Image (cartoon, rainbow, N blue to C red; front, top):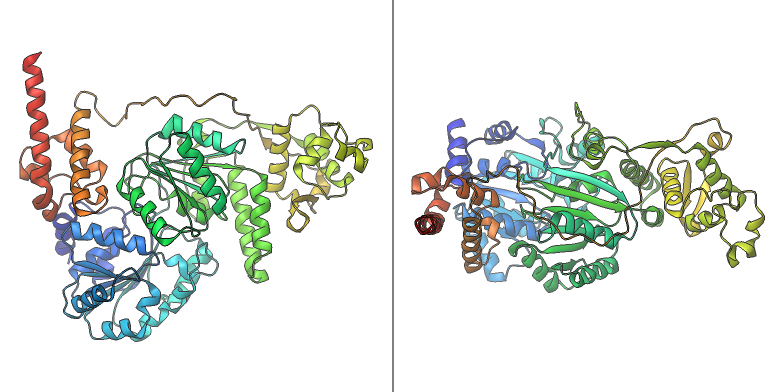
Length: 613
């Protein structure tokens, strides 16, 4: 068994060794055991069921909630020579018949299928007549009603064990806190199955959160400074904001496309295809709309609005840097989206218990945003994982945050809330505190309050920071039924009495300058003495041509990391080429001659240039 799985890893997928707990999971599955696998995005979850499906007799059935993800997985597997197909609503009737015949005749290693189609009697009858290697339940957090991406159809998957008790099941997710894990185990009947937890750390991702202050300009500066011309995702809270942001970015020279449920299916498909297959495309999407993304070279994920929970944030940011290369998770947030999200929770049709859970998750997200400590350590702690030291690669580690004694400012803010009747939002309260002479303030008589003008020592930006942090800590609350009015909480009174000291992070207002042209900084992992930019571009061009001819994304041919290895090692023979990471037997046969020819041609050009010099 051990020999088989290592041989498949090298021969089919072109990897020299397993990562983390991959080998233990695969051996357990090959031997017929059930399991729950928690592994970070980009950590190699797919191999944990793909290799057992190849090694075991029969077809491996993969349950996936996302059609786009199925398609990408199938395309990638076919490139490696694995017999894979999918059953979903995009197929014609004739195509469905062909896939079903391949399943019945044992001509497939892996079949990807949506849960609702899997549980239809037609599919269940087909599988009952078929030798099955395993069931892989991908995105298993969808089974949890307490999770961030609940799918009702996932609740019925427990029927698989009842109908096929001898077929091993492997449930996989990148995102599940302790309550979600317990519910996955309970819902799927995995009570005796071992849990493999590989850790949630994504050290290649740099996390950063900044207070919102002209969010689009902040985003543009971020792109200019770090990611001009890179593929990335920008998340927004509403469809209108998605459309407006995408249009605005295009006006700034960014190749940006919107993606949300309000667009036609054809438009969404075209935009996703461009994102997958072209270099440097930025997708702007709603937080609420899940995208099945298997693109490895997403260099950044930016949030222009607050996610609903740390689980949602972790999964969305996890779409960056799946190839292990450096990537950014960047977010701006302000008080308004806290009001919006709380309003969405309070006015949802969920029961009171679920609303309480969702509000706690939102509060945890707010706490993460206002951290002065290492963000990575806090993220890992949320998923019950200990980080022994600060990461050195988040905004708080790279630029340590200073704190200040905000006790007096907090008392002024709370007093103003109380004296104005707890009926106004932050913007109005700040005007009162700073003593602004407005018709509205005079009409309410708030220019005669003791708190009028007592806060003119701080500017609007600083006061917004104070109110935001007070809300994040639960020292003030936002009344979602009162149009965002700010109210006192039970914890406000000790502060008002002066019994509690309040320390806050000091937010520094960004300089109001135009975005700077992005300077391309050298990659410290590349040796300037051996790096050949012309060869790199020639390899990328050939990859794009081969991908376009087949109608597949370039990364299913080879990842950027494999092309970089070609530049560094300059293989000259098929045997040399086979030693590259990600080059299995099928890819060696299909693509070795093309890329070896590019390398040889570039070598001849370099030699001729050397003679000319």
